Image (tube, rainbow, N blue to C red; front, side, top):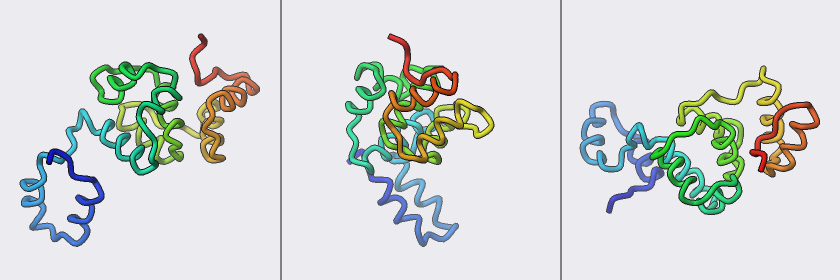
Length: 150
């Protein structure tokens, strides 16, 4: 077995004493996150918890399955912060979950003092995950859309 659910690992850590952490690392090393893959594992776990399929995320984010997969697995790197936000919207991530994903990808978190980010935060907090609806909110405030122009 090459995969152990995060929940199972969480249970092992629940009542563990500090002197046992070395054994935990040794016994579970093949399941531990590779820093380069931490974003991928986080996204995969979050989407699995929400019963959302990766192919639906790619479609919703407006990217091909092959490109989306390369970005998610961090085989290719993007500087397009909006793409990562669109992945999070597709996964119905809340504000904290979105910020964690952005941070794991190496991007700045949504920032309340930034007008555009503030609009996105308000949308997320109101469970508005539809990108065209968010684009409307942004455009009504004179801000750039979250989706790319075709």
